[in-house]
Amino acid sequence: MISRRFFVRLRLLVGALFILVLAQAFTGGLNLASLEKTYTRSIITGFEIVGFKQQTSIQSAVKFGKPLNKLLGLDKILASIGDQLPDLSDVALLLPDGTMVQSLSGADDTSLSGQHFINEYQAAAPEMEETARSIVIKAHTQRHILFPINTPDGELAGMLVFSFPESLIRDQVEKNVADNLRFLILATAGAFV
Image (cartoon, rainbow, N blue to C red; front, side):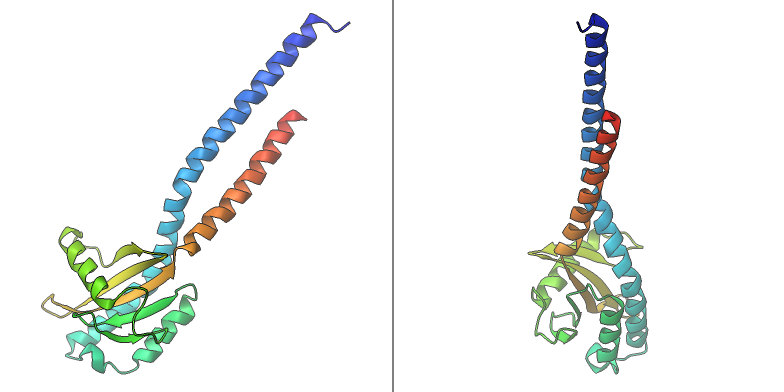
């Protein structure tokens, strides 16, 4: 005959395992909520490091009176960016009217018109912090980082645009979720042993 003590211990064990699974589910939910934001910021920051360097380089040429559409070596600059950041789907340089000076992909436009990027920047510019050097917009299946190129008197001379697929972020999140689920399953199975 199975003792009453055994049933009490069994109920305690089942209750403890239920609390463990509940706590893991809660923790997993909190982690999932922050993963997309964390990976988005991480990926964008990596792109911005290269973008800020190129923004400064192009802006220096503009400060010395060189028009963007007459910039020498622009194809090499864009190719260098593409080599450093192979996850980018496109890199483009735009004039203030939205005309594309050059694009890494060679297309006449990225997934949106150049004028759209200029309009997005101009709408966001008044709300930007003084220290902000770029803005990020999400459109369709792409994210675009806009780096304004300014004249010495602060007028918009053009814009450097980095585009990357939204799937880049989603793939990172899905990979991390799969890894976390495996770990949670192993931890739960270990508690049963």
